[in-house]
Length: 258
Image (spheres, rainbow, N blue to C red):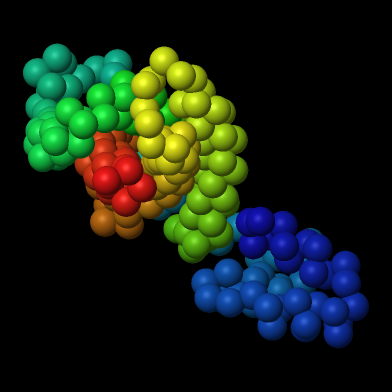
């Protein structure tokens, strides 16, 4: 909560309760509250907020707008006024990461060509395993990017947010892993190995957990190093999922089927 709202609540409590709660508040929030509580109730100092946006007096309106676009995390792209050339130049470097990741995924599939020849059904399940991982990774990263822009997600709560998305990925991965494992039991796949349904079930579960985790970490990492998460997150998330998803799939297949 904003510090001025917290101070309102604290003044309604007993002195002992207020002191106990203040001990639990650390860092800048604690300093802000102590400053507000020094003022008498209903004075200007008491009702002020320490959270404000300051600019130099000589700042132009255009510069102020650009600066605001940068706390919000959307400074790199202005869809309404940027030219095609500028938009292309902004996005090109980040898409190179996705392109490079795709090449690595192609290389990994080639390295496991022997397994694919021996059990051709492995290839048939690559699209759904990779696709579901990509979908949940995109969902997680979109939620985090939006949360960072609106202030709903704070970098101080990174571990809490990461644990929530990890748990979500595990729950969804378990559900879809079970469904895919049942589908893999259909005789048409002509796979003699009884472990095949377990392989595809574990693979989609692992990939969805990985994707949700990566989709959470990457935008927060970019925010930390002051790179616009809205632009850079997508390519890196899809690249990571492509590489680690393919790798984990064939590692699990090798462990159970070969």
